Image (cartoon, rainbow, N blue to C red):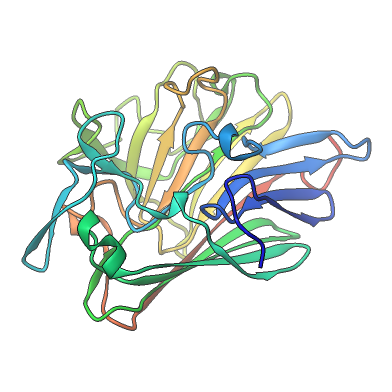
Length: 320
């Protein structure tokens, strides 16, 4: 069995598409196209080696995405205290699995399935006394890259669960300011100065944060959790990023398991602010452990929860 370290990486391919996945955190480290001359065009702004990560690039965020204010929440009449590990203030952020070695369950040239388990006895003193088996599959095919997750409650008590992913996307611009974005959220969470939700959902209508139709990113400083997503007849929510001069459009689709999407322009990333746009599919909004009506999954023992998000670049079938 391969010893997994932060530098362990796996490369998947399908025609002119390449993906680099690491079993360290099940992270999505790169997704790019290779043209006939061997030149690479990034779709996901990524990195190589464990020390290369900036701003949570490609992280998997389980069992909670986003921040939990003061790391404290109540569930089924009991109060729990999580480790406060957020640089922005005394909050818990982004769960546990992004710094764990995952097992490689299946791997082929164009797909890989990774698994990890959280055991209640390991996390009881860290504020999460629940047991989960987590599976993430990345798959390349003719329609782009798909990411499928499944969470199973393997414990003996009901568990609160949220799932999120943290990819950054690029359409080849030097700064994300030059691109345009479309975001399906009709509302967004009001945050306090520590980036924790106040409990208020604001409508995007008649505000600078209404991106339901393409608008330039320009100087907007996104760090927003959008909710109440617009969906098509099949329950799919879609975000898009494009650069008209380069004739590139990236399409991110999220199935009905995803009820929120965080959008972040990376202004606080050292040495690379605004290099790419994080569009983060999330099954629940930030701090949903304290606001379960915002999409928190409640899994009874033996129950399973699954979903899929995908990304496609309109130029993937042709040379750059």
